[in-house]
Length: 80
View 1 (tube, rainbow, N blue to C red):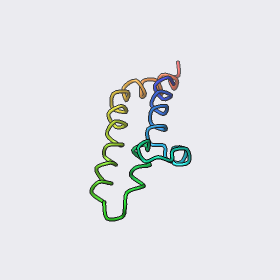
View 2: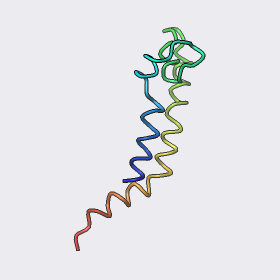
View 3: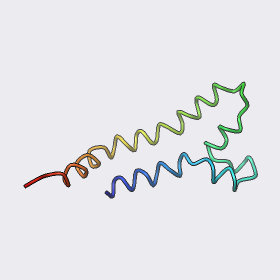
View 4: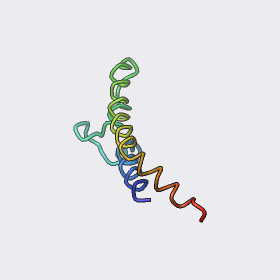
């Protein structure tokens, strides 16, 4: 349960869009997700690179914690 909480506690704020969009008014303070949405339609290459920038840390964090996540989920399902 701790691993799941750690994973979601990292993932949700990292890719959050709505709250930072409402609170941040200056472009210099934008998060990556808000900055990506502020790009124009002609800047697809930058948008794709930024999307990878958001996704890679989440995937790495998931793979690091995957063994603990699976063992924690299966430990409660054993019948003795």
